[in-house]
Image (cartoon, rainbow, N blue to C red; front, side, top):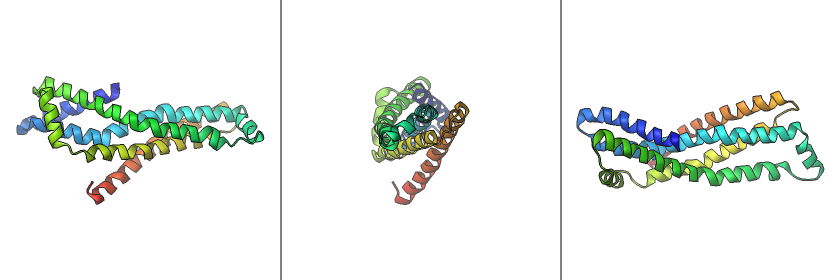
Length: 202
């Protein structure tokens, strides 16, 4: 939430500084809407979730492997994929889109507050410009990415956890690798989405 608010504040401040030169300060609302709803809201949220939950998935499953709990589950005919991986990925599939919505709202609130302070754009003016200048499909463009990013983060975290060998050092290295791979995959797939949306004119 703090990152989202600060993101909105920084975007509004930097946008206002540039748009003021052209007498088009009201369009800072459009800048905020497009950048946050389509791109930055979902990316920032996904990066934070990758650092928090993706690493936790790897560390938890990796520790279970070190303690031979995963082997014990297989001995008891319990599939680790169903017991360990599927619930985590499903939970992330539900949580990440909700977190993106919260992030979008908080970032826009931060941007609205900064617009009020630096540009004198009142909250009713901000909301009016936002309604008229930002189509609804911008919101859907960001939300469509969230489940895909959730699967990428969840699967990567669990995959690296399953690759841990029987040492504490391995848990640490695979946890680090999980975060790096998750963030890289999120950015790569965001670029793919951008190309796809441009081709579809979405």
